[in-house]
Length: 209
Image 1 (spheres, rainbow, N blue to C red):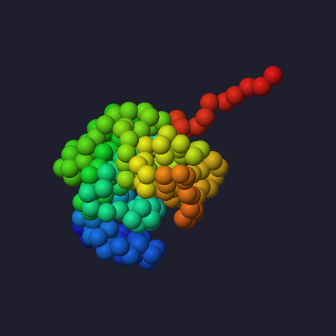
Image 2: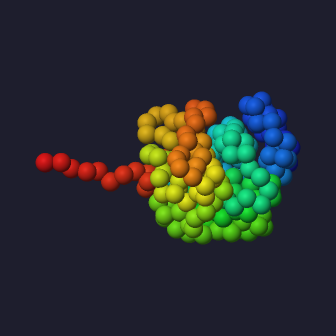
């Protein structure tokens, strides 16, 4: 399969036509080998308009959705990024000149994506998704949805930092952009999306007598 040709078709038919106009982002999407972030037996589906398995329950976000999230973040060279459950987004942002840490909680996912992330200059850490690695980030992004507002992630942003994520508590979700100010937090809805949910972020049930 000609993956380079498939990448061009992906950018032309799934990215540009959905108002992702940033040419630096487009160039990064054309350069990053999306097929290497998939389970080996699913590489053939890397450029289809769907989520593709990485390992276990984890999937890559569809290219249309991840490109729109990244454009909403307005990434700038040398910014510090934490990519939580977002290995493909991590590599794309690194290609754009940002300094990226990719956080995963499952060693099986790192076994698939670790080598290609290292080649992209992305540092990897293994830690629970409920506990973001470090703090003071300019950007945080996730390719998976969260069932509730990820307050721990928001707290890891520096003032002026931005978080792009899909919030999904039912069949459909909303991609949202948070911006942390010095005295508050803004939230803007971006588009409808329904990626797989990080179930481990769901709050524990409570019981009342």
